[in-house]
Structure formats: structure tokens, C-alpha cells
Length: 139
Image (cartoon, rainbow, N blue to C red; front, side):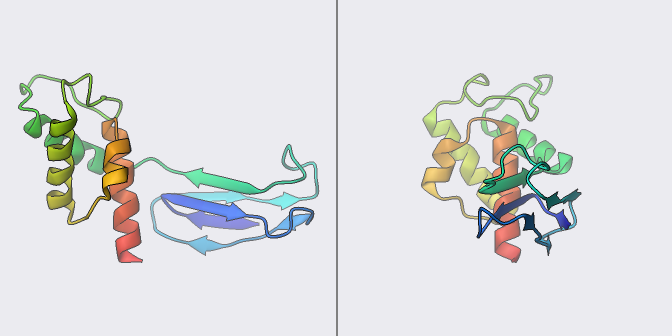
């Protein structure tokens, strides 16, 4: 039985033929997830190679990112920006996206790799990335 609190957690089986996986790790206090694997019928594949559990960013992080995006794009106060909002749909070009990332770096005290910055397309993706970077920074 494993119990995990994390924004992201990945388990890889060292021995794919093993009949039991047991791993415990506490990475943060965001959410609690439990799972177990005993025998080949618990999961659909006996050759379980990896299991990944991810939780979405905290609502307050998404809200902060939304406000920064609104400010950087000079959007009207009545415009709706939420986790599902795509930068391109909001009118952001590649330069706007760079400015958004710079604003996020400043606000959250993080540094975003150029490769990661280019892969962000939504507010939710940005918030998830921020929480991952903060977790890594504090760890």
C-alpha cells in the first residue's frame, strides 16, 4: 500500500515481474492519494512499468496566473480568464507569451527553462508548471 501527498508523483517498477509494488513518499501537503498493487489482477497490465499521479495546481495559483495574463495582455476587466484559457485564444503572440512567463517568474520567484516556457499554452499548464518548480525549489 502506498500513500502519497503531492502535486506530482511517479512510481516505476524496478522488477516488472514483481507481484507487489510498495512505495511511500510524502512530497507536499496538497492532496492525499492511495493505491495498492497485489497480484496481477489489480492493474490491467501485469507488466506495470510506471504509474503517474498528478494533481492540478491550487485554485489560488491559477487565479494569480490568470491575473498576470490579464495584465500582460491588457485585457478588459470584464474578460474571463481561467485555467482552460489558451494564450492564443486570448490574443497572445510569441512575444506576449515570453512577457507572461517573465511576469510569472518575477511574481513567483522562479526561473523557467526556455523549453518549458515554449510548451505552455494554457493558464492551467502555467499554474501546474509553477507549482512543480516551487516544489523542486523547496525540495
